[in-house]
Length: 112
Image (cartoon, rainbow, N blue to C red; front, side, top):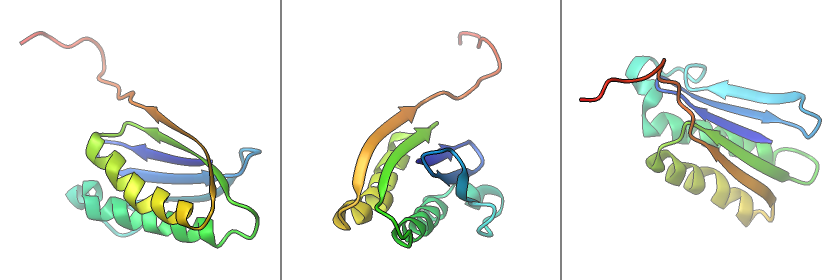
């Protein structure tokens, strides 16, 4: 399972096996990006390329499920280009793709 979490300040990539044990985890902060640079498209693409390299280096058959959380449309196209296309070219099997757009806003907001 590939879990991509997009927060307001950082991107997270979590890869686990089907039993749920953690295999690989990285964030843009781990890659050396600081402050506003952690939210850039360059940081996301670097993180996704690192995830593709890890998945392709796996010895067994690659069957994956992608779960994205808190994603904007621009980030979805970036994920499709950088993560899905190289894996599908290598004859990897995509089981599913789930998008969760839940971003907490700490209660009700006032009308403007």
